[in-house]
Amino acid sequence: MFRFSPNPNRAHLISRREWGADAFEEARRQDKLVMLFLGAFWCGICRRMDETTLSVDEKIKLLNAYFIPVRV
Image 1 (spheres, helix red, strand yellow):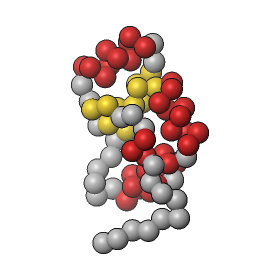
Image 2: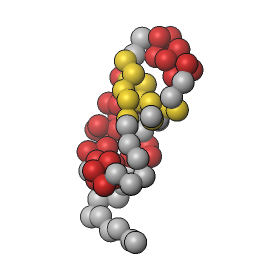
Image 3: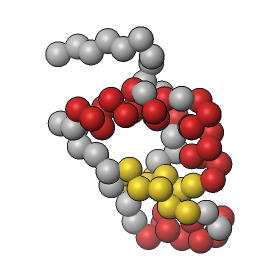
């Protein structure tokens, strides 16, 4: 199946870390909060969020600047 969206999916620009002690240690060192991203390949709402909310330049910059994003 092909999906076309008027907005390109830019969620890959969020510097998401994998779940683990390293991500939480990095958050402690940088004095940042951890932002958890929960999702699954079959989750339509997750894909829609990647294509919309998480593809906005301002949100990408804020997430990377003030949080340690972690993919679960």
